[in-house]
Image 1 (cartoon, rainbow, N blue to C red):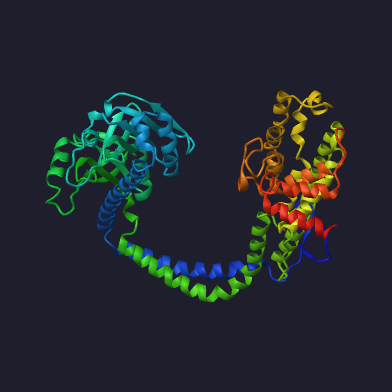
Image 2: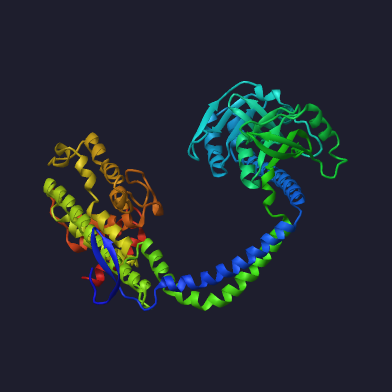
Amino acid sequence: MTTSNHTYDTVKGGVHEQLPRVRVPIRTKIILPYLLLAFCLALGAAYLVTQIVFDSLEERFTNQLIESGKLASEWMYREEERLLATLRLVANTEGLPAAIQDRQAERIRELTFGIAVDNREEAVEILDSQGYLLYSMRHIPGGMVEEYEFTKEGDQSFLNYDFVENVVRRRLDGYSDKYSGWIRADWGDYFYIAGPIIDAAGSQIGTVLVGESLQTMTRQMREETLAQVTLYDLSGEVITSTFSQPISLEVETVADLLQNQDSSSLRRTQRDLTVTNIDYQEIVGPWEVREDRDIGALGVALPESFYVRPSRVTRLQVILLMGVTFFFIILLGANLARVITKPLISLLRASIQVSKGDLEVRVQPESNDEVAVLTEAFNQMVASLQASRDALFEAYDRTLEGWSKALELRDKETEGHTLRVTNMTVELARWMGICDKEELIHIQRGALLHDIGKMGIPDRILLKPGKLTDEEWSLMRKHPEFAYEMLWPIEYLRPALDIPYCHHERWDGRGYPRQLKGEEIPVAARIFAVIDVFDALTSDRPYRIAMSREKALAEIKSQRGRHFDPRVVDAFLEYMARNA
């Protein structure tokens, strides 16, 4: 593209193309406040480095390590509460107790699968009243959110774990009827919360376990704390770790930690360790579950080079410094930013309208820079999209008319019928207050294709001059279903399916193919049904001559509340009277 004013050159497809000249480039508008901001941040960074050098590095590192340990413990508590919330959702699902009593694994899956997927749970286990595995759902590692492996029926291995047996045997500890613990199984090391499933009579008919793999938990704790996380069992052996080569604890260390946890203010022990030639300090605390039961130890480790991370006090200083800096920068740039962003916001709003299908939106340029050029390009793009869409829909509609014409050529009895009923249906819909353009388009398309399902009817039946047999009528009545099967795969025709699929339904529920009744029938099909019958009555057929307009209207009126929607009949009679 070449214009009369240009200052910059660009290359497009090997050809130099000059850009239009702008009064103040937007790049200049944006760079100026960032230069000022960078200057202020440089001053702040200099102050911050000075403060870090004079702070106690070792104390800061210790504080950071303790804080990471607290964050890991808090994360474990929150995760346990999250699993507990999912457990309650599953246990209180309506219909689940009956499905467990009847051992209907597929029904259990229907009731629990959505909850598991919505809450991103890795494992849900359902046990019967004796503790036998009835149904299991475990997420496939690395799979999509909804990809699970399902198991029906199983052994009694869950009863090997005390926390599960406590629930199955209904042992209450005075705190809750729900217990937590971890297990080592063929599918991995998992942390579970177990709780009872109670029926309406108050009887326990099963147990639900909601769990998460310990590998996932340690990985998420590492992301939360930026530290290496390790879970140990009560003997000090590593269960899982984010270390590639974790080091076990001595059993005496774990025993001493758990024995003295109530008397120690920190409830933690600290040790040095070296992993893959990197020196770490690890803080180890008790791994407690919700009933204050110790099930192992939780270790959090930071590399000794991590001490440069600011302490909490230093972070507050940084936040305060940054806040003051940004306050003055915002005061300086607020007006400038408003001027810059106003046309961009207009473009954004217009883009949102376009994304919703409104191709008539246009944006008025408000400046003389690159944004104005972008605005003009946007308007041209939307205009092109609108022209392309209109042409595409025009081609679609001509295709639909061709389909209906092809059916008329096959069935001479309905020649001209399709266009007549289509025009009258759209007019009656408008008369009844349906003014939405998109809805009227779908009604028009549905009317054009109302008998498209007859393409699936053999000629010997469709063109038979005499009366149809019961068997032939049975096949003929399937043409709405044939229409549905033909049109449903075509996505843009799905909103138009109401008429082809439902125009033979009756208000009294005696129609076909689904025997819908009253307002169960889509309103478009109810409108079309009146027009279709009226046109049939007033058209010549091989087996009878056309009725007069008056007799046909009387026949329509006689079917009010039986074949047709009374409200549609009243509107139709009023419409016909006004258009006599």
